[in-house]
Amino acid sequence: MKLLLVEDDRAIARSLTEGLTADGHHVEHVSTGLDAIATVTHGDHQMILLDLGLPDLDGRDVCREIRRVSSVPIIMITARGDELDRVLGLELGADDYVTKPFSMREVLARIRAVARRTIPSPTDSTSSAPTAAATPGTEESVQAIGPLTIDRRTRRVHLDGTTVELTAKEFDVLACLADDPGAVRTRTEILEQVWDMNWFGPTKTVDAHVAALRKKLGDHRWIDAVRGVGFRLEVPPGVDDGSTDSTP
Image (cartoon, rainbow, N blue to C red; front, side, top):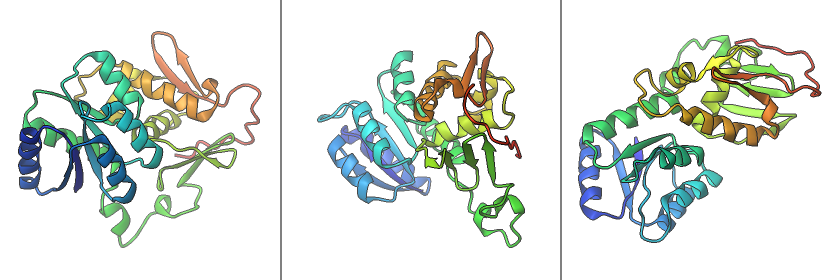
């Protein structure tokens, strides 16, 4: 993959670049937040490794600015290991979080895990006999829940015909809940489906992404919290639900 490494510590940057290159990745390195934002705006990177302790801007501000122009997956790399910092980073749109000190093996494993969740496999678009679900515009590829439509093939979401810009992880959480509209999905189920079966982070990660989804959908009632259990997706009361289609 083509990776953008944003890291001001030369020793760490050199070590990461060597390890990532040895694993077959193409790495572009910048050392400031402003350079990162400018590079993403005009680049075609498939993933970003973002250090939070940059000399010019706070890495969380950089993440926020990147999310304004791109949905490219972001893995934060930082010495800040507190749960609050992790949750804030994920809420801003990061897809994963690596805390210093870390091993090269861990970084590579997280890159692969995020790639599996966010980057379509080449076989998805090169199959000689695509299925109906992979055909643009078919009922199988687009799910409608009232005025909300979710296209899993193109990973696009529309509400009342207007595009809803979501991060890769936000889309995955929404799609997870939409698999069975009205049914309650526990935080653990969402973590296992959207993140990883071996996820060891806080379940508040789910809450952070749900909060972001509610904000972008414009009505917190789209995602109902069931105290002590989890969340469910449903058309808010008073919203014209038309004919709800829950075709997978």
